[in-house]
Image (cartoon, rainbow, N blue to C red; front, side):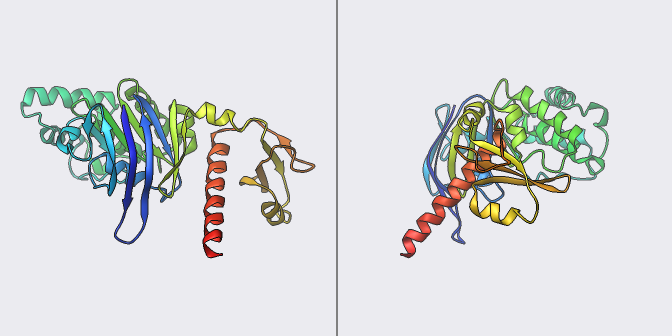
Length: 301
C-alpha cells in the first residue's frame, strides 16, 4: 500500500504543482488521470524520490518515501515520460549496464536477469539491435524491462502509451496488466481508455488537486441517467455550449456530437446514453473549473 497525505509542491516560478494530495494506492494497477500540466508528473517524480516535496508524507509499506530514499529506490521501477536511450548501443548491452547499476555484479546472475526480462517484454529477437533502430513501442517495452530489474514492488509509468500505434499500445498495456497482478503499478496518463481497460482503482487530478479517487465503474455509475447525446449543426454549437452543461464535443462525419450533463432531458433532440469514464473525467474537470472561477469571482468582489 502506498499512502500519500497532504502532499504539496510549489516550484520556484510560483506554479503550485501539488496541492494537498491525499491518496491510498493498493497493490495492482492504479490509474492516474489528468490533462497535461495537471501535476501527474510532479506526483510521479516525488514518489520516485527524484524531487523534494514542500510538505506532506508518503508511506510505502512502512518506508518513509521522502526520507528513506535509498531503501525506496531498491524497491522501485520507474519509466519516465521521456525515456532516453543510447542509440548506438544494443538492447542487451544497455539492459546489462542497468542491471549492474541495480547491483547485479555477478556476470552469470546478471545474464539470467537480462535474458528473462528481454523475453518478458518480447524483445529477445531484437536483443542485438541498436536501440536507435527501435520503434516507439519497442523503446517503451525496453523501458519497462529496465524498470523491472530487481523485481521492484512499486512500478511507476508516466504517459507510457503516448505516440504508440494501436498494436504497440495494446501490447504494452497487456504487459502492464501482467506486471500489475503482483506489485503496485501506477499508470499516469491522459488517455481515459487506458484506465478503463486496466485499472481497478483510479484518481483524477487537475491543477495539483485530487478531484476523484475510487473505482472506475463506481464513478461511471454516479453519472447514470445524467448524460445526454445529440448531433447538432456547427452554427448552433456556440449557443449550446454557452447554455448547456457540455461535457465534450467531437466531430463525427463532419458534424458536432455533444455529450451533456443534465438530470433531465436538456432539450428536444438529446438522447440519454450510458456514461463512460470519459464523461466522468470531463464532468469532474468542468466542476473543478467552475469552482475555481467562482472562487476567483468571490475574491474579486
